[in-house]
Length: 602
Image (tube, rainbow, N blue to C red; front, side, top):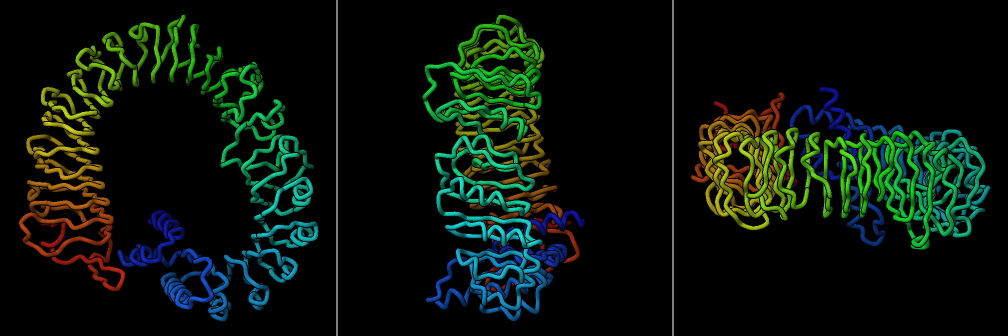
């Protein structure tokens, strides 16, 4: 229970919609207890409130007061300059710590400096006496000038752990050398441009702290503790001249590398990189057709135009014309726009082929357990270990020979159905309308239908059914089928007769009419973002904690015996507060008469 409350508290802490948080507290006692766990107010502080329009300030002030009442155990308050002007005395007396989220003037912070833990300042850095901020841990600086005096001041603040600098001029050697003298544990510099004269050849002194430059350009050859965050990923970028990347690898020890070319200079040349001594690599993806790589041995994953003769488990070949040996260690092979011929018999377990040609008898690959998109290949009869098969629209399913071992089959964009009688799981995506007649497949237990069908006939053995983007104009009669779970997604105007054995119903972004619901005992009912759901009678019984509803239009009874409709967001619970009714300007949630609910316990 405590772990669950902690998780909910984290969600609420970062949810910035006040009305959602307020409604959450009225669900039950557990949810109210979660509000008491919040120590920092989560509401997003409105930025750039005009001083001309007093109504904007008034609305924001009211929101802020309501937020402080909703979270009575707040110890650290987040506040901007406009709110600080209005509530300074209250904030000073009430809270232990203060976070200033906007640029402000020093005089406004007088008498509260000893409580400020985070501060945002601009070019008027010299106006602040930062020695008075005895609890300051984080500092945000927005400026167009950085000098050694600023850095010396920052180094003298013993409590400071983190600095972010938004610098709006070009970063050059002088600026980087000044910043590198800062001794704060972590520094992030946000800049829009780095001087091209220092790109790819920057050398900095050693550091014990961490400095990050967030920029659109990558810098090669810098100190291990100073680097550029390149859109969240490390990429090796080849400039006009090939640079030595060994320092980069030794410093950062990356386990996964993607190599790309950002220019066409080397199209007519051949370059080789030797990675054989770097045994910490797990995967290497080479997207440069003129670059050859000597791979480490072993390595788990390789993507390249060629085939490395090393111990590799997963191999992707892109735009490759290859004749030769596939390492016996390869168990997972994917071909993209390639033409390959094997000179040996690899021990593959997975094979995927997109717009590729394999000049090899696939039936000899008896170790295969999964095949995906194999083009126009139709004979799989000798693959006695094959469990899963995916075909595409280029294949005539009536010509396919299936092995008896096959249990899962997926038709992509098919225009007809013909499959093995042993199939247990089947996925059908239709590219055009055609009849879906599956009643003869008596071992089928799991089915997913996607697309348009002229008729739907299902086997009685089904236990799980999913409709995704289904278009069907007639009634789907499931009353004689053993279906336990049904999942409906992005489907409109479906009419379904349910079986009595159904236990779980999930509906997402759909419009559905259910019939034969009166005597059904459900274990779970979920409905998310639906236009409407219609039932002929309330379900016989269902536990309240297993009903999940979110942002829906009403659930409608066909005979209209009740005028009570669920229109609000609802997450029901079986905790102590099972009956409550709250109503105000932001909505209501209620549990009242049994006849009016989607469930009825008897």
